[in-house]
Image (cartoon, helix red, strand yellow):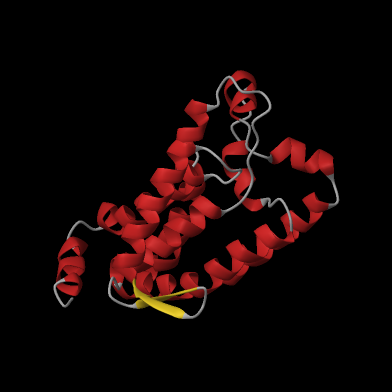
Amino acid sequence: MTLIIIAITALVSIAAFKNDKLLYKYQFNAYQVLKRNQWYRMITYGFIHANWDHLLVNMIVLYFFGDSLEYYFSDYFDSLGIFYFVILYLSAIVISTLVDLRKHREHYHYNAVGASGATSAVVFATIFFAPLNSIYLFFVIPIPGIIFATAYLYYSYYMSKKNVDNIGHSAHLSGALFGFLFPMIIKPQLFSVFLHEILKF
């Protein structure tokens, strides 16, 4: 399923690179969503990216973590694993932008694209199942997943408050928190799995 999502996102994003009308119609814009009832934008923006760098970073992250998460979901949810994976990904696209929906509801010129919130959810759901597995920062520096998660949440929160760049830090934060909680929302007993893993630290 990870590869299917990557393929769809790549095709849609590449089409949007060449078609400004497509980008304008399907990117996230809180004003258009709320004032003109264009609710489809809450999903479609997650399949469009600003440029090749933006697309590649998100899809590389999804590729490496999505496969692992599919394995964990299949292990704990059996035949429903793929279904829950898709639900996690799509719902994270929506949930990760709820803060910006409220914050920018009157800002006609605020737009956003990209799967960062959803990929953050996939990363954090994977960390939930294996909190001590190493995540390689810059593909070189090994950091236990739970340490990376804590630092990432702090950084995203701090940067969302500063609001000094063009990156959707609030979407990263919301997506990450949702991804971490999602397995327990589906199956609360999994909290004991997380505790068992974290106590090995």
